[in-house]
Length: 401
Length: 165
Image (cartoon, rainbow over all chains, first blue to last red; front, side, top):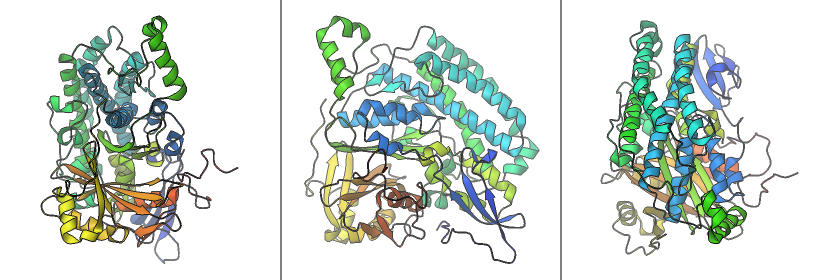
């Protein structure tokens, strides 16, 4: 059974150990994570994460908003993969409403989600390598990340807080020339992946800092609720995109990379291989992009086009009603999970039949992954904590919500 | 927008692996069930939740070995006020099931499932922090997200959105 620290309040008084405070403003904690470390020399005896510094009460705020007003809030939970959060929330509400999403919107969603995954993994790779001491990778990764952010800006008008997926479809038609730009990126990117891997994968210093460090067994990973690359790095072959497909993922061909070792290097290899699979899926989406509408047919739920609104009385009425009083969602509850770059992102939405969600709960992959940190680090050296935090790829915005 | 009506008749749902297992073990443990929008919810009697989770985790036909989430819904002012919700996942069978426990508003408490899944540690602390539901047997039941000295439980429905002033 996995380790569960029974008495996490650390008190000095032992002869050999001391308490060290790490964070909340430590560059390698990826946000505002505070760690209390009990150390014996350089060895970690116990470790206790302290979270909540970024708690903004998003779940409570959601209960006071109309369903469509929650979409921009979901961006702000995990600021490295806003589109994945958008997708998870809109899928949950669409399931409550029973909406059919047209194929083009589904393919766009998959394509942008995979770009988001690459975007998020690039930030992870850059900062993770920077934590361990490889400066160059950071600069390379952010160079390509900028290209992806420009694509997001082109399609949604925003670089990071996209809110591009809406209940019932997409916010806008992709602009002219968008697919050419994505194609250009998809053609260039695999060579860039080789560049990163040339710097790291066979690098002996990288190997010494990551191989055999911060191990977790498959059994412990499952017991502690780890998901995503943290779980697959320990040899569990489970990916929601393949095993419980949503939004048309079943039409895509891709491999789920797994690694058996369960150490920092294994998780690194999983994510790097995932990026290659993702760019191949972007290519598949580009090749097979269907034609057709980008919104479902549901005038009471989806805002009408601007032109319709100005020429048709009925469209104007629906527009007015959606903006002023929202739309009622049939009572019920839905748990929708998607494979975010960090693992299982889940939205549990409860409706009581009104226009505002009764309860929105976000299942944060990072919160569960963070629980593995004590078993990853205890008994190891202080310097390995930095590598371990990087390898589970946490975003504190998502943990604290 | 066709959403088929929810099935709440326990007799129709008795073949579901989780319900069958729980009813074979202890018929009193299952208070009811609901199959709605392709999702199965099982209402579990409060005192059996830990054993029910352990049973489902070790069920050889369909092991729900992964605890995806624990959360809570406040149905204030109706009683029973709280519903604690467990989302279980079977990694091998790719199935999900939702367990629900109804709790009174006066002193909401139930057994912790941390002995079954250590993953429940943070999830239960979060529910305690934001709803004030107590989990008996939790190794470290303290606030997770809010400050230690915070008053009240913010996700309760009688807690104002803008906080107390």
